[in-house]
Image (tube, rainbow, N blue to C red; front, side, top):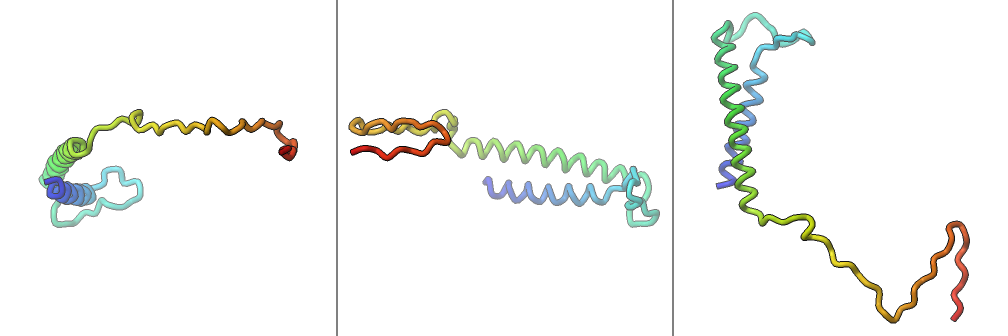
Length: 111
């Protein structure tokens, strides 16, 4: 189920990118995108692309939410606090190592 929905989500994302790239640029910042001729021209094409973009965006958001809910139900809920590792303790028979001042060489231990 989740794999089928993931493939549908991927197709929706590709279609959304394609529809957004088909839309006419209104800013014209780089001087590209506003060609006069083409297959779809006029207000009807603008309305169709705008409506298609809105529908695909709604489908994309809906499928994203459904996928996240399915993934959340699939994995057990665990907190990171529950995953704290156990503290290791030193054996009782070992002697503590004396700390030395920084920059001073360590003295050999007498046996």
